[in-house]
Image 1 (cartoon, helix red, strand yellow):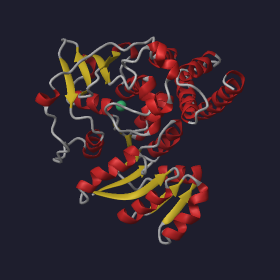
Image 2 (spheres, rainbow, N blue to C red):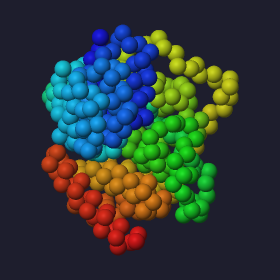
Image 3 (cartoon, rainbow, N blue to C red):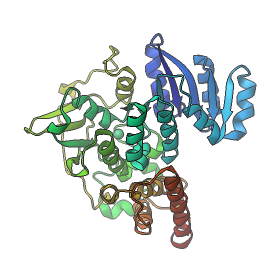
Image 4 (cartoon, rainbow, N blue to C red):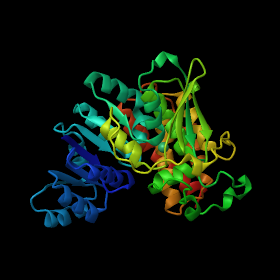
Length: 384
Ligand code: MN
């Protein structure tokens, strides 16, 4: 039995991970669950899986948990989350936390020698180099749970890294792929929250609408697979059937396909190196009929350019990119800024940033605080 913990168990990836595990309860034992604020669902899950420990990030919900679950160990707050992330008595920790606050928990898992099923792409964006070095030192593996990275991981199985010519990440193009750039000013939150193919949490749905999601994924792929950024491309593929591709030095290309369902990459991260025999839904290519491709429009989606800029400049720039994006998306979801202000805020944060070459965890924390401060003063000055 594989002993599992899930950080962020009540979100989109967390609940889908549990759906996968429900299909093979004999293979997995869930010991640890954490959630941000959905306390009812967290307690329900804790009871159902008879877990050892839970953590609710929102401290005000601690007594609710204690009343509901008198016999389960309960932590709360950021300290509690970091404690759960440091537990070494499990085989795999799934990190399904949303945003930059998921990075430190990833680091804690690795420090404790626990392999990580990584859905929190922000971890690699902010601290990819640091995390890779730590993984090597601790002999810990990261299993990608993002659909594109799972695709590349599968394409690379049995291949030689020096024979890779390039990685090609596919992206659906989001809800505004065909929208005219002059109408971007009118985009409402409700429009941006409608993703054509994937059902996901709010943050990543907005990231898909700005296409920052693809930018973050390019950076994530760079660190996960140790491929230079010049060899990572984005292709828009509106049907979301091909989840990514790898081109080898002889021009041969491998791709991974499937219906757009996160449970497939989630399951592969759980069952790696095997493919478990649970068929979610077969891909019927005759029904799909057409697969189309186009180049990304960098004028409409400046976030892609900003992400490439950040990783090319390197050092601390991807930290700023990620934190500024987290904050800007939050402000947009709280109706404080317009959709088109998201890339403006990120660009201005990057322009004002002073480069640090090899940021350690303290540097990253400082940059996080500085970037947030900067954005809030810009908000007061320019958007109020
Ligand atoms: Mn993805």
